[in-house]
Amino acid sequence: MVRVRFAPSPTGLLHIGNARMAVFNWLFARRHKGAFILRIEDTDVARSERKHMEQLMADLHWLGLTWQEGPDVGGPYGPYIQSERLHIYHDICRKFLHDGLAYRCYCTPEELEERRQVAKRTGKPPRYDNRCRNLTDEQNKAFETSGLNFTVRFKVPEEFLVFDDLIRGACQFDMSLVGDFVIMRSDGTPSFHFAVAVDDTLMQITHVIRGEDHLSNTPCHILLFHALNRKPPQFAHLSLTMGADRTLLSKRHGAFSLSEYRKLGYLPEALLNYMMLLGWAPKDKKERFKADDVIETFEISTMSKSSSVFDQQKLDWLSGQYLREAELERLTNLAIPYLQAAGFVSQDENTIDRAKLRLTVDTVRNNISCMSQIVQEVNIFFNDIVISENHIEFLSSETAQSILLSFYNEICKTNTLSPEIFKDTLKTVQKETKVTGKGLYLPIRVALTGREHGPELYGVAHILGIDTCKKRIERFLLVKK
Ligand code: GLU
Image 1 (cartoon, rainbow, N blue to C red):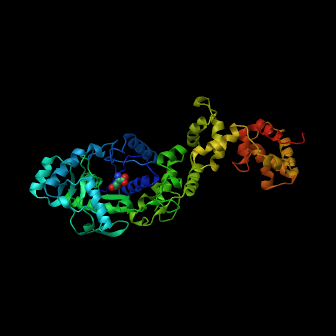
Image 2: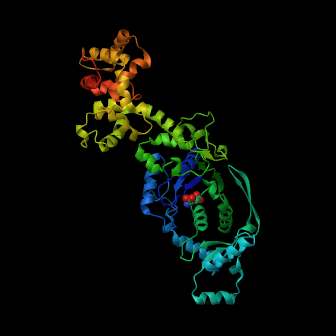
Image 3: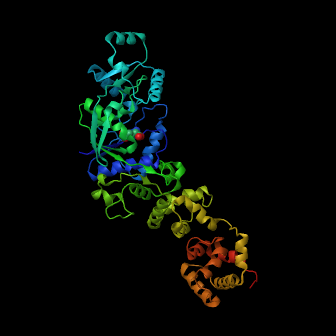
């Protein structure tokens, strides 16, 4: 059975580039009816925090991802948090020492740094020179009794290592360029390489799907798999996501963490759809799809070898499409906290006029790409509008005045402004003034909203209600009727 894992380090909020790795692991597991496992790699004690772990789990759940094994749901190969597995790493490290696969290294960090500098100056690879590998028994004894700190290093064979990457094909590494690497630090914590290989072995991981930034780590992991008597899993190194300037995606490019997108009120299914488009496209090249639509046809080998480019505008476009089609009741519920925070609706949900709110959300949903933007859009319904000098001048023109006056006179004849009445009213105004299209709409829009763009005007008028519409028009009628 296919078993894949997403193995984040809980050192901060889950960035969209990293979360994308989770998405493709999850997709792959579903494609092959396998298991998706969440493992927390928190051996960097200084930078890891439990609150980050909890946040990232909540964010992945929000995105719609579920895992069959993980810190919160348990599973047969737990614990799934590396800091709770230290005894496992220690046992295996002891076995490696006993079997001569690894050795104690007493070189101090200062000595190592000095040798690195010398290697650099003399143009040699900055690898560890393996000097503690061949200590004599006496030297070893002397070090042991000296009480000096030591690390444990794995003996790297000087060989060419070849493996087949599911995306990149054959990858070759000259291991003579890699020195014996640390598997256990002097503080008793396992190195990244060691913990990953031990866990992937014990958790029976069949496919390692991760970022191409890990490609150079893979040969070390393969050596460890061999030492652990385990056939290495298959590897797929996904290309990374860049900003438009071709540097690794970061906040600078307007890309946020999952938490931030969630706070901004993006719909999770829209974000998930966008993330699946980074470095992959379904066969039919459709841009809008659900994970369920593509499960059957997802082939990891078709993922792009070159980096994808994050495009906030495209995400916003896609997100807008989802908002237009989402269930209105759901959007209304999502809108409430933003409107409450802006002071537009009551904190007591029972006193909110839901029918009006639904109408409001329905009217503005075409103009937003995430729910937090609703605040700017609905401002015109809850606050007095401010009209700029330019707009005042515009509304004073002869044509604008004739439109406003005709519109005003018409709405004075009715006591409601339903969309139907509004549309009929405009027909009459058009007949009277002989102005059509945008020329007709614009003065009314500017007078009612203070803006030149916005939601459909009939919806705006309906929400504002007849009295507010009249008041807003009256302000600009130079000749009182
Ligand atoms: N903890 C590693 C990271 O966050 C994961 C490495 C792996 O997937 O093997 O990059």
